[in-house]
Image: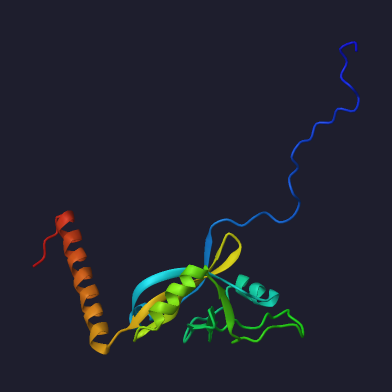
Length: 179
């Protein structure tokens, strides 16, 4: 050989895949603010959801309601019930049922832990929020115990007292003392 490179030598460069750019970050679709008021949260879990195509399109439009929603564990699987995802407006006869039961995707150990905890008296699974995380729909569910009416009043009183304290501290730092 005379120092020339052979003609069959091909170098491969990585090619960028065509298509949509990958989504990053977190976008909240719906949150259940009443759950934090009605329940004391013991533990939270992040779960994926099994959805149909029109459900995802409706969620991308930001339409969902977690009011009166709850989760149950049946036959070793976790199911989300009573979540309202309205029908997709441009959908056809393949549209989904708005209040159908949807399966949640969790690790086996998490499901076994939830089975053990929900068998205790007074504990239930409540969805706190639904959001997109890196393009996938996720639900934050909480293992929670229902609050009594006096517990709710105590929580509100503590929050009001904390607000008063922070206001007084803010005034003191700015040099405006009011008694």
